[in-house]
Every structure is written in structure tokens, then in C-alpha cells.
Amino acid sequence: MINHLITQKNWQTQLSEAITSIDELLSILKLESLRAEVYVPKHFELRVPRGFVAKMIIGDSMILY
Image (cartoon, rainbow, N blue to C red; front, side, top):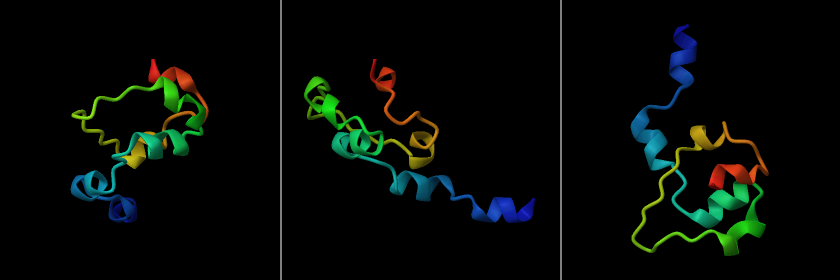
């Protein structure tokens, strides 16, 4: 049990490694073709932890609606 806790990153590290680019997020999710359809205002700050992205289904565009 202790080994499991050691391998987990703390929330500060997870936040510092979060995805902050819509282009990177779409690329990881294999949704680059949807880029033209996705509008993100310039003032909207994106920060998605990679652990959360890992739970998403690759290629599933329903996550955007």
C-alpha cells in the first residue's frame, strides 16, 4: 500500500504538468480534425490534469459537447 502512495504525484505536480493547450489536448485525444469546430475564447484558461485525460476515450468527440 505504501508503494502505491509513493508512485502517485501530489496535486501540485499534477497541476504543473497539466495540459494548457487546446491543440495538445485534441492531439492527445486524436481529435485534431475537430480543431476548426472548437472555439475557445482567448481569455479562457485551460488546465486539464493528464490523469483526467487518461480516463477519456481516445477519439470520442462526445467529450466536447
